[in-house]
Image (cartoon, rainbow, N blue to C red; front, side, top):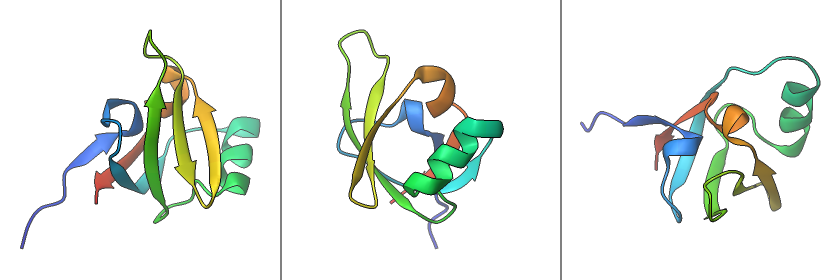
Length: 80
């Protein structure tokens, strides 16, 4: 059986699909992401990266959201 590779959302390449395993955020930002579908087990698609690399756009549950580097580095998942 293959061991899943765990990476941070920020380190994923465009077009990758990541299944969320942990979210290390607190407060309002954590609540907002949970409400948008960034929950453990959800599959996130990496849509695009800005020219300077920050922010990045992700799609989860039919929602597209841009996250800053500080936020996307605190969300980990497995490549699907």
